[in-house]
Image (tube, rainbow, N blue to C red):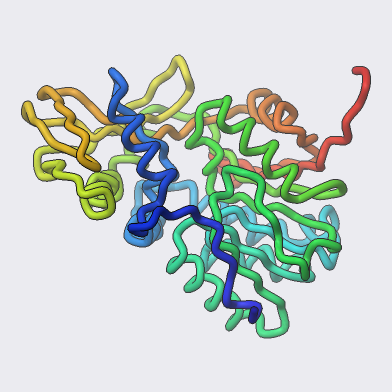
Amino acid sequence: MSQNEGIQLVNLDESGVDIAFREDVLAGLSQSQKALPARWLYDDAGSQLFEDITQVEEYYPTRCETEILSSRGAEFAEQIGKGRAVVEFGSGSSVKTPLLLNAIEPGAYVPLDIAGDFLRAAAAELSAKFPGLPVYPVEADFMKRVELPDAVKSKPKLGFFPGSTIGNMVPRTSVDLLRSMRETLGDNAKLLIGMDLIKDTEVLEAAYDDAAGVTAQFNLNLLRRINRELDGTIPVEQFHHEARWNDTFARIEMHAVADADMEFSVADRPFAMQAGETIHTENSHKFDVRSSNTLLLAGHWTPCARWTDAQGRFSVILAEATIARAAP
C-alpha cells in the first residue's frame, strides 16, 4: 500500500450502505424526540459545507483557533517536541493543520475520517505542502478505537482534534471518544484539542444560524443524505433550520423543524411527524476551565497547558495520556 492510498475500515452491507449510518438513523427517527448523531452530517457534501461555514462572518471558532495556532507555535514545539506521529481525528483543515505541522516537526501524519473522498483529498493536499512528511490516511469511524498503520505504531503520538468537535457530543459520548482516543494513541501520547468557551447567547446563536444560510444547508444536507443513501422519502423542502441556546446544558442545539404534518419512509420503515416537531441533529457544548478539565480527566487525559485567543472566546488545550493509578 502506498502511503497516500489509505485504509478503509467502514462496514458496508452487500448493497454498499454504511451499516452504522442506517442503524443510527432508524433508531434516531424512532425516538419521541427524533435525533441523529452529528457525525453523520459529514459526508463529502457536508464536509465541504462545513468548510464553507468556517468562512462566514458569524462563525468565530475557526478564526479564533487559527489565531492561537498561528501565534503559539513556539510554545507548541516546546511542549510537544519533535518527531511525533500526528493523528488527526477528522480530515485535515487546509489552514489549521499546516500551522501545527510547521510548528512541531512531526515524524508522520495520520488523518482519520469516515468521509473517504474528502479524507483522501485532504491527505493529498497535505502531502503536496509537506513533500518529505509520510502521510497515511485511514478511512474509519474514529468514535471507536482505530488500528493505526504499522509504519507509525512505534512512534510517539500526538492526537489532534481541532474545531471544538468534542462539543458536538453529549458528555457520555465525549468521554467514550476521549477514552477511545487514548486507546488508539497509546501510552506516552499527547492530545491537542479545541474547546469553545461559554459566551453571550446572541454571539453563539448567530454563529450557528448565519445570515447567508450556509449552516441551514449543512443541517438539511443530512436529510438529503438519508434520502440518497437509505432510500428515504423525507420532504426536505418542508423543513427549516433552527439554532437555539440551551442554558441548562450549556450548548447550542441545531434542529431540523417540520413545517407541516408529514409521512415518509427510510430504508422501508414508515415515519410520521407533525408540524413544529423537530429532528435534533447537533449539539455544540460550550465550556469553561473547570468543565473542560473534568471532561478530559474523565476521558483519561490530564490537562497540562491551555491557550486562548485574544478575545477569550476559544481555547486550545494540551493534555497527556493519564497513567492508571490504583488510588487517588
